[in-house]
Image 1 (cartoon, helix red, strand yellow):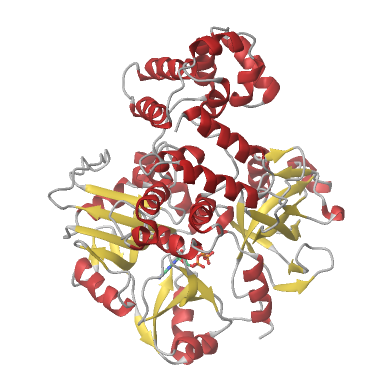
Image 2 (cartoon, helix red, strand yellow):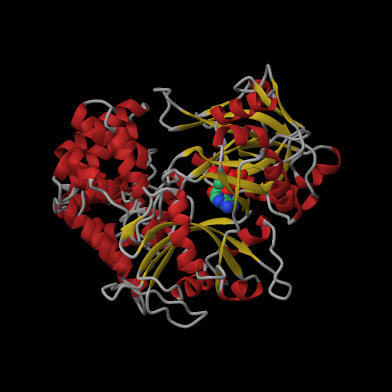
Length: 598
Ligand code: ATP
């Protein structure tokens, strides 16, 4: 397909306010694509060059993109900046540039999607001395070779601003629509995506081999598996009734890490670990959101590198500890290890250990279909007799079938400073991407507080009065999410208010939340927000900040979006490891509401 035609599709997607329509336009695009180019189109339409977990970066700042445009269109960088200021968008700036029309008419080359993709790949791959200059030149040449519509979209990609408003899941819907004219094939496509999160790869397989093609998608080292998640039950008795005989482990409060190891002789990949010397073999670490965190955790890389396996995928929780005492640190401290700069020093100051609780793949064989009991047995073998290699520790586990014993264990783990316990069925497979009763979390023994914290989205804040006027923030509004089926909005996730929080924060937390909120400030209420007008905050923020909130109970509410509100809500932490798609949903809130009433 010519890139110009592809850009016309992007324009149609951008202009449609309806998600259903967007899905059908995607289906049309996919229908017209060949099997060789569909993966590239998927990545490009999502504003990337490769799946998110491969973190292919352009390393071209907005400032550099002004130079790209200036060179491409032979105008002064200041003019570009001016045009950018007017439109607030690099793509939009294209149409503002006076010389542009003339220049583009004479030079556009009608490139194919594959050609543009390859040239963007070359720009991203260029590194080392003089690479910034070369990147600017190559990008400018590419822009010069494009018509204005194509340039508009291509310019947004290096600075991660394409944002057409859809995600991997809409791509799955679009593929289903292409084949069946509706979303009916989504479950089969999602199954494949759950075990192998390469969205472009799935599109390619589906295009080539239809449903049979995606049915063959298998777990692969270096491609993350979507994580399994836990359900909630109100108390020990309910857990025993539901699970009968089950494994109990501590619920560690750290960062979920999926560790992929490939030490097979044919592993061509190698990564550099400058803290502990070069790692000869391949280790990659993914977050619960499928982000690549490998470079943040050289200590985990070094630990995984020592495992006596050919290939493996491990699931676990990374927890920071105090080097002198060995004492585990709280989540708020662990999360500071997630950083791009100063990785080395931070790793020394605050090392990590990973509590491993599952094994999903071993020496070339997938284990996810095997019952947990069997996966655990294999995991014990991998981690050795005492369950420890440097930096990796087997999660303690006990088989339980009595509420009394479960209660004792819950108390023990809470006393040790853990969040609670995880109860796991012994006979079931690892259900990638699912939240169900194969795993049940239990956090509190008392009924005074809710059984679980709620991960809310910050929607806006109110100016401060009295003592807090100094912080410029007196309260903030939070909400939970719901799947937005509304055809009138483009966003897949809606957010409805559940609480206005105005007490219980330390001065430092007030400052922090204000600082973070100001970065996400928007002029008007985002269209996906459901908020009563009497609750409208002074400052609206984009739905990107997730906070963990503890409340005493959930009550009925005449004013909040879903008829439910949090009573005595307080801020526990900033959940930087979660994006909005992983915040608590309306359905979960309703379930918690029922749970508390027994
Ligand atoms: P929470 O907000 O309560 O941490 P969550 O929404 O992050 O929950 P859940 O699916 O509810 O995720 O709970 C599972 C999470 O608990 C996992 O993502 C993992 O990070 C953490 N965890 C800690 N210890 C364990 C364990 N032993 N087994 C499985 N998950 C564990």
